Structure formats: C-alpha cells, structure tokens
Image (cartoon, rainbow, N blue to C red; front, side, top):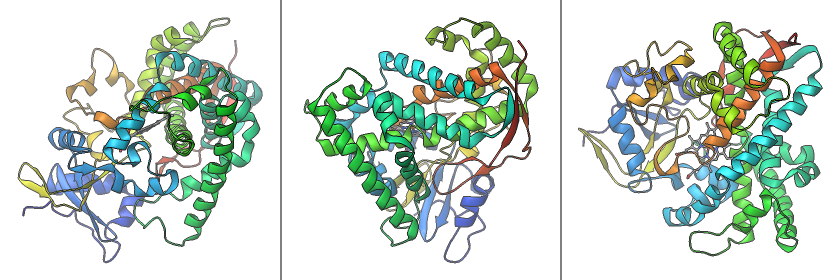
Length: 438
Ligand code: HEM
C-alpha cells in the first residue's frame, strides 16, 4: 500500500508533537515541499495524513461523514460537550442540524448585529480618552458578552457573571486532541469540574425557561425542533448550548484580536478603513446590515486575517476505511487533517501570499475564487461553520467601531501566533490608544 510519506523531523515517542505546537506552519510547509499535496505526520504514535491542494481537500470535505468521520477525531470535544451535533454520528448530527441553523437566520442576525454594536459601543465609552490595553484580553471579554447576550438573552447573561465564563476558560485550557481525554491530569480534572458546573447552571436556566416562556432569542433555542419534528431533551439543549457558547467566543476572540493587530500594523490599509468608517458611521448614522455590506475595506481586512491568522489552523477527521486519493492510500485508523499553513499561502492562488494585502479579496482580484476551498478558515462542505456570518459580523463591528473612535499605536511590535492544542491566538499584545480628534 502506498501510504502518505512522513515529513522529516520525527522524534522518538513524541513524533512531530513539538513542531506541531511550536512551529506548525514550518512543519506543514516542509511536508508539502518534501512530499507534495499529501504527506504524513506522527503525533505520539498516531499517524496523521495531511491533505492539501484542491483535489485532496475536495476529497476531505466530500468524504466527511462517509469514509472520514468527525466523531472519533473530536472525541476530546465530546468529552466536554457530549455527543451532540457534529460530535455525534451522522444521523444524530442531521437530526440536530436544524436547531443550529435556526439560530443564524437573517432575522436573528439582525438582532445579533444590534447586540454587537451595543456591546462594543459600551466598551468604547468606558475606555476614556487615552490609555493602554492588552488587545486579546479586552476582546475575549467583549465576545463572551456578545455570545451570552445573543444566545441566552441580556437578563440571563447578566445573572451568570464572571464565574460562568471563567469555567469556559478551564474548558479551553483542557482542549487536547492528542492525549486520551480521560487521563487523570490536573487540566482534565479542572475541565470536568467546569463542565459539571456549567451543565448544572444551564440545566436550571433551560428548565426555568421551558416552564415560563418569554419572547427572546433564548426562547427560540429552547423551542427549536429537531429534523424528526421532536423537541430535543433538556440534556441535548444544554449540551448544544454549552458547545455554541464555546464556539461563539473562543475562535472569534483570536481572529478578532488579530484583525485589530494586523490593521494597526498596516497604516496604509488602515487609512482606507478610516475613510470608509468616517463616511458610513458618522454621527447619528445607524449601524445596520446595509452599513455592514458597505464596509468593504473592513470586510476585506477581516477576510485577510482569516487567511493569514486563522484560529482553526487544522480540522480533523479519522479514516473509517482505507481511502485512496490518486496514487496514495490513507489506511483505516489514520487521522486526516487539513492545513491552512499550506493552503492559505498557495502562491498559485494568492499573489505574494506572505504579504498582508486585503485588496486580494476585492471583486476585481477575487483571488479566493480561483479554487472552491481556497479559504478553509471556517471549514467547508456540510459541516462548514454555522456561525461564519456571526463571527465575520462581530469581527467587522469591533474593528470598524474601534478604529472610528481611536488611534492605536502598538507597544508590542512582535506579536506571534500562540498555539496550544486547541485554537491559535495572538500572543499578549499591548497597545496605546488615543481618542481621535473630531
Ligand atoms: C472566527 C471564528 C470562527 C472560526 C475560525 C470557526 C471555525 C470553524 C471551523 C473550521 C468549523 C468546521 C469544523 C470541521 O469541519 O471540523 C466550524 C464549525 C462550526 N462552528 Fe465555527 N468558527 C468560528 C466562529 C463560530 C461561531 C461564532 C459559532 C456560533 C456561535 C460557531 C459555530 C460552529 C458550529 C455550530 C460548527 C459546526 C457546524 C456543523 O457541523 O454543521 N463558529 N467552525
């Protein structure tokens, strides 16, 4: 069997683990250079096929839920949230899918946009005329607030307070696709405690709401029906909610922070953003969907950050059977993953891919249209991110309103990608901010 060839640099026992965490982009680019579109890694004894390039990626997305399953690959997430939605088998996923998608209808998105504008405006009002802040920690607080208010409603979100969201931090710190999720390690023990606490709180909230309906976004979730026409059990609602609140803040926070940092690093492009926000968000103007559509430079900045600094650098599957792609066969039992470090920097698709150049997404250049899955920051195919519009809107609102009001100077000038085993984010980045003159 012609299996994918291992990239160089494998160490005894740990395999490529250290490079995977510390220098993932170099590791992936080395794999592509040495072996072409399909190559292999080894993490602590587990073989992983990395699929890059148009043809292999197409197979990756088409074969998901067929010969490639998500359930096993994301067992570390199911250890937190339970076997719901894409963490469950295909049939269960399809049954739960309408609930996820009810939450992102056009009507709902209008409400979410209003919430985002309100939360971000209140944050800016509190910043004062001038000061210093660490971008990631400011943004994470903001996006937690947006997620809580969007999916639970203002009243419940206010009651939950700090402790609730701190428990989510313990979940994030325990994300680990490599180690078995039930090892008695301190981080897994903290994860289980946090999970229990969150589930208890959410059970109470869901039960109370089912008994006393109200007219808000949370009610929609509590009342949403599954594909089979049944109402989900309280347990399923709690698990879905827990997963949504997690997905709703963790990944968005990293990319939103990078969007700000990259704009601050590129003053020429920032000037184009400024011209746009000054016209579209002047005094008394409403920030609605039309405004959002017209914030073209902001939107291209958000897209360029998704290309260069995606929070989800890889997405994972497990091969349920031998899978032949061209000359190569991926054996049953291997893990299979994508790699933005290769695909988002493909010079046949992106001009000078290492350069920050949001105009590559302009209608005239539209580089991302050269290939169906050129950008995979939000996945692709059936399981493409349900929250993509939510996340893109939130990142655009934060960037537009912040740069409309403030000038930012980077105090930290060498921000790096910080990778754990979960999503990646910028390292600590301090900025000096000063209110712009009218
Ligand atoms: C910048 C922010 C975000 C990034 C980078 C991101 C990334 C992704 C990726 C890569 C996937 C596909 C996973 C796979 O195929 O293995 C995904 C799926 C998903 N995301 Fe996001 N996401 C973001 C924000 C959000 C938000 C804000 C929500 C909800 C509030 C959300 C909810 C979901 C859900 C429910 C799925 C599963 C979809 C399905 O299986 O049908 N995401 N996300």
